[in-house]
Image (cartoon, rainbow, N blue to C red; front, side):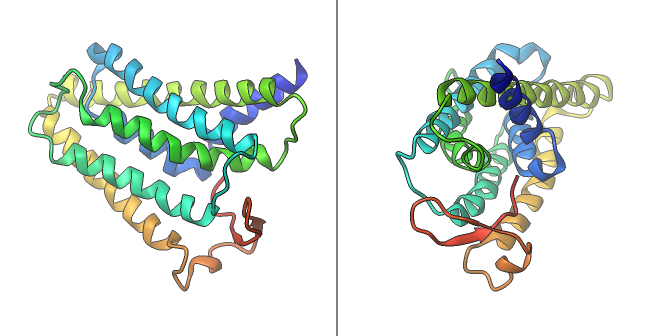
Length: 218
């Protein structure tokens, strides 16, 4: 039980920190088009993302897949950018389809984010107690994500329903701001960018092939 509690807290702390700004903004971008009345759609959205990152988190913890963490860190802001662009091109602020594209974004991009989550878990864990620890870590992440969702829906309520700012303006305006941050991060994190290795003095082994990358994340 102590291990479960430790990994649960680790999952929460892994998200609710300034170092996880990229993940926070991704969840924010996913939820911008929704209001309180759309909570069922938000549940589906978060569930799709959860399924995606749970799969790759488990596979990584079991050492069943190998990847270069430098490229994962580069792909994370691209998932944010793609989500923002999808928001910006919407003609209607609210979801109008039964299965809007953003659900598939959440599922597919969750696979990428799960690989980033695995970095923290793999730094601490062997195979002993792996299932329980994975569960605790994942539940901690989910709790933190739900807190972010509630905050985003609360801000959307204040902006759209109280301040009476058009819903589409809010969706596009907030998405543009997040898009700018994501593109800056993508540029900074490109694995072959000349300044990529200068952002941190710390290094960590890349799973599988023995190369190294900066610990810019988590």
